[in-house]
Length: 117
Image (tube, one colour):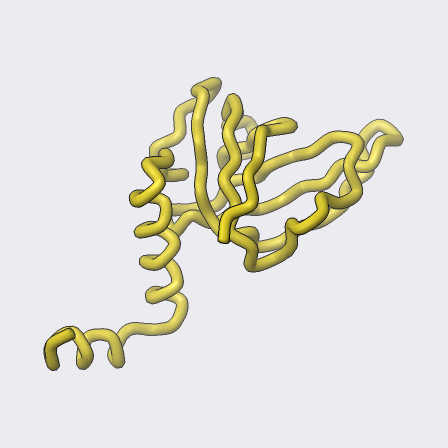
């Protein structure tokens, strides 16, 4: 790393560095960027879990996981689940399924998932 890159890195905020790291991981794994997802498209997203919450829907517990890939946020919704072993905020994850844009951001209902290092 040269001096120019070191100075640039020192000037960049932590959030910006984290965002670029997530975007680089997504690009390395060949996943779709969140801001390029179209409605009802089969997608594969790679990102970091930003938050998790349990939302009751029609009397059934529903786990809603918000994923940040450096380009935007997406939600992975797991019906009938209260938790997923190994999945927590800050964990890298790959999810794939059919996207819906009804809520303004991509949502995947009961997607296939893979926990990443």
